[in-house]
Structure formats: C-alpha cells, structure tokens
Image (cartoon, rainbow, N blue to C red; front, top):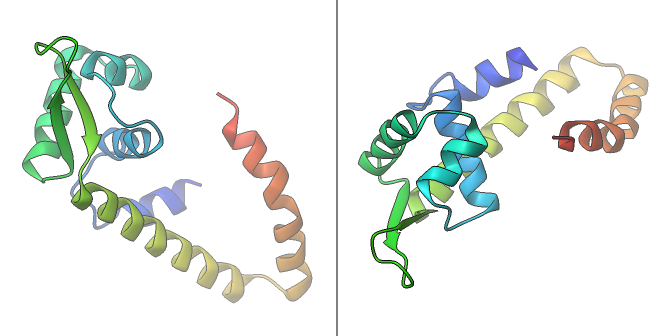
Length: 125
C-alpha cells in the first residue's frame, strides 16, 4: 500500500492530507472547514492552510451558506474533480501494469476474488 500511495503522489503538488480532503469533498460536497478539520483530525489552523493551498490551485470552491452568510461551505471545483479523476486513473493504470508484470494468471485470478473482501476491510472506519 505504501508503494502504491507513493506512486500515486509522486508527481502531485499535494500532501496526503490535502489529497484526503479532495477525496472527502468528492464523497461529501459542501462541508464546513470545521467539519473537514474534525474528519481529517487536524486543527482548524491546519485545515485553513490546507484549504488555502487547494484554493490557490483552483481545486475547491468556497460558497457562503444561505442560512448563515458567515459560514462558508467547501466543494470541489471542476479542476479538483479532474485532478482526482486523473490521479485515480494513473494509480489504477500503474497497479494494473504491476500486477500483470509480477503475477501469474492464477495469482491474478486470486487477486480479483480478494478485491471484494479487501474493499470491505478498507471501508471500515
């Protein structure tokens, strides 16, 4: 997993936490900065810096809430979604190539069968 993470982040201008925030915003748009900080287990100050960097790159959109204009919801921009899609595609391509180069056909079949249970394990919070 570490090698997969390092490959997928090798050319990325983002830290692992910044990448995690992008993934979270993809799954749950319109989160408040405080909610993001809590979910990522970082301080509000750290999240502010993360959001500033993502904003500078054009990966997020800040939208004042209608119910309370002082609060700002954060969502992925088109550029942020494109970054996520491109990163996932590159990672999947690398992993597929690595599996085909290092695993026998029987091992590849075994890996395919294990994907369901492995995904369920990874989904546990």
